Length: 309
Image (cartoon, rainbow, N blue to C red; front, side):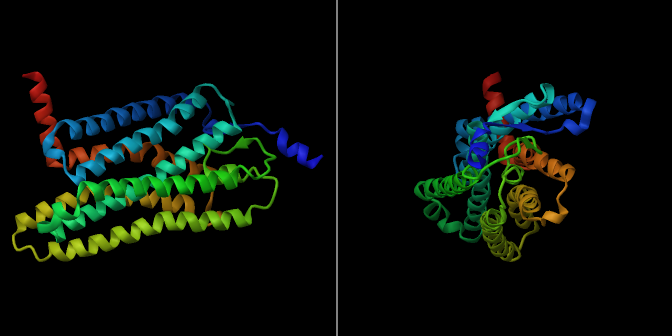
């Protein structure tokens, strides 16, 4: 009889932002605006990098991959979230939930390791400038991108397989998408082992990139300090500032969301964090890289000027 109850559950319902009541329409307008801006900004970044040959370098190749990944990342989560703000209690099938979680984990992990590859690129460019073109070959860039995706794919298969082999009793997900912990809470059995394993895997995915990026920037800073001219120091630092800003926001939110103690969890805080890394961060990337990066702004001017003439 117990086994029968486990197999009868076929769908979940997102609680989402239901506690915000009449303010959900306002949230819908705000999130839709940010979502459209995110898609447009990332499409512009990818298009400019493809069109302008001045940006056909490893750094901008990684940036175009990150922008593409962020676009798909938001497509996986935001449209359904917007739908749930207008039409409440919209169900999602178990298969749909598993699919959403699968792509969310792949892309979130992929983004972390793409940022790591970008950090390595900055290290080679600043610390090994004479060997830059040799080290950062097309082959190595492709391997780093494929490796980032491969790690994400491995983590996604592991998480989704472990998660959807659990028996579920609850149907209401206290979140706006199928994230790992909110879905795990619906299990009928003790999930302590699953939580420990998930904590270990999440720690690896967060701290390995942070550690590698930290090492890269320690070496970068030591090289920057050896630059005699203030102008050279300023230019070198500017090339790293955009990347470092995105890393701090991305990894900071992920660390708080997935590595904080359960005693510090609250639905409101979790929603704010989730909105930050699913909606705000994908918009932050193109904004930071376009507003703070002279090469991107110059390329945009060239493309716009070419089209006008």
